[in-house]
Image (spheres, rainbow, N blue to C red):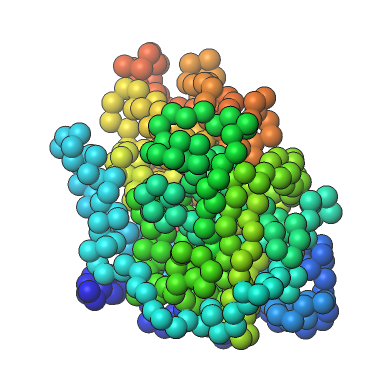
Length: 518
């Protein structure tokens, strides 16, 4: 089925990049890529360069292609998503806000009339994406299999980065990790860091709230019961026999790379979303050693299996929180084959003290998922995850307030939605407040709150990487109602007006401005 005319116009035909090579050429043509020809080490040196570029002046924040990585024969592309403009280009649009507008056009945003309609809304995105013809398709030959190694595949040929001095080893940082649910067969694609142990072994850091970790849990239960899992204990004394076929995909269309990081509902295939972003379906090819399919346009594919019984200490790792995450046990990925293009590009990212490249990947998620958030909370005007909050520590939300307690309803609603349930702090402001402007949002949050009445503090799930919680993945959360308070909410005084200039005076000064010499 061909994409509908409505959806076809989303795609900017000038952005024809389906591979990393295409994207490199695209960025270079726009003066937004620097080729680094000097020899640079994959151990720490690339990180130091990228960290300075990410935190430096905007004029020097560019994508970097390291063409001479010491000891390796392939280039490393990094910081390709490290600005709003590059992130938009990666997703085949000119500006990130287009993601919000385009997806809003695709799905029906009318307020549901009953609970059944609301339940159906949860599936509307998947149905809409399938309806417009972006379902992945299978091909027999693929660029990612121009070179195939099954006899003695080795990770040693890949320029896997050691990012920070205390890291437990080299880490693959920008992968698309493909697994299928052991019981239902539904595909999951996640961006989970992978620590290199040796030439044939990786460790998969999928946190307990992520889809891959759910596949591991089900595989353990199936191995113990041999049947549909239902409330079986995850005792460490059990020895699971079920291995999970997996593939680590590196490179390809940048939309596919980003889609692996998208917090989609379990019923939505990440590559279905990538196809919609690309304006055409993602092509797949069968793996050579595992019962999986992978994107045909990838640069490198590492095939193997995850063994839930083979748990090993993983980490430390300098993470996006800006701190090292401690050593924890995660399952091993055993390599069975490596396939690649003849001239692959190795994609990577570096996370650490913000701002870094991952902030812009999160900003794309924020913009794209605003229409989905409105499916369940239609009063939401906008939301933002500021860089210092490293995604899960702070969410700013503006709403159309309609009744007493409305802000509290939104607070609890956000804490019940997918990975937003992990948010440690949520601040709700009125509709006119620009939550993309942290200064304006902070002004409202600090000035509009009576800290004895307008705050909710409650225990709940938090991100597994949160080091401040006294228990792993469980800690305190705060919700702040920074909206203007109503008499029905117990505010007996007159809420003040914001001090603003009259429109007439503002217009006169605007007309004079160029003559004022300012």
